[in-house]
Amino acid sequence: MYLAILLQEGGGLMSYLPFLAMFLVIYLFMIRPQMKRQKNEKAFQSEIARGAKVITSSGIHGKIVELNDNDNTVVIETGAGKIKFERSAISMEMTNKMNAPKK
Image (cartoon, rainbow, N blue to C red; front, side, top):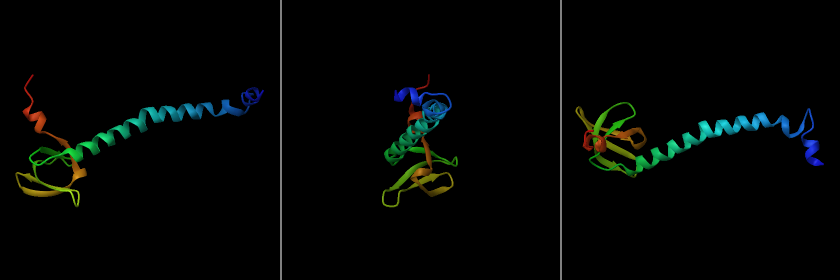
């Protein structure tokens, strides 16, 4: 009886169905992958170690020479000298890619 009232033309649950479907699509294709990407980035940033060759988000290549856990920074040695960055500025590690066997 109540289901028939909700499914009546001009109101009820059927009028909200397109909005629910739209939210589901947005969640599956936008929100969920972004959360997964953030989780992977956070794990990567916590696992970086001294001596790793990295690239910052601004494109600077260098080697990590110092890690400061207190203020969440790293010191990277580049061709121009040593530069201090936030951990969040490191975008990828190149050590494994450089040491990988050629295919």
